[in-house]
Length: 120
Image 1: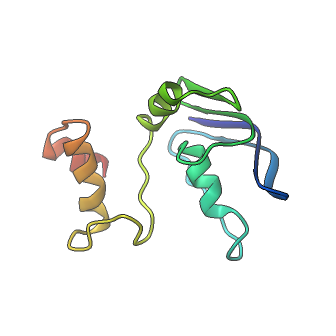
Image 2: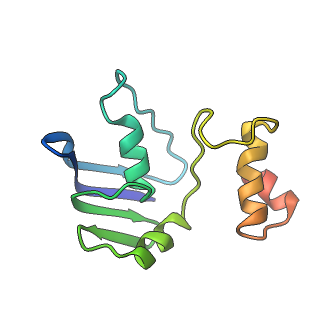
């Protein structure tokens, strides 16, 4: 489960989102839709702790980050609860999206190919 509470992200004077609250239950599918430049990618990167929030908290399963105090070790623990693949962003171009997802599970988590492809 993913729980976001009062999440705020700013770039200088520009606030991308402020006091955002969201709960995503296991198996639930969520679409983030909006025009270019409205913070969709930044929100995903912030949930995955690839981008730091200015305030609020993100909890994935039982791992929580509380901003702005989250440290590098806590951010790593949260990232290990997630997978993150972006359209044409840092992918191996000769692999499918599924193969790219499985590759990280096999390489980083040392999962078997069968388990990785089942999850991917």
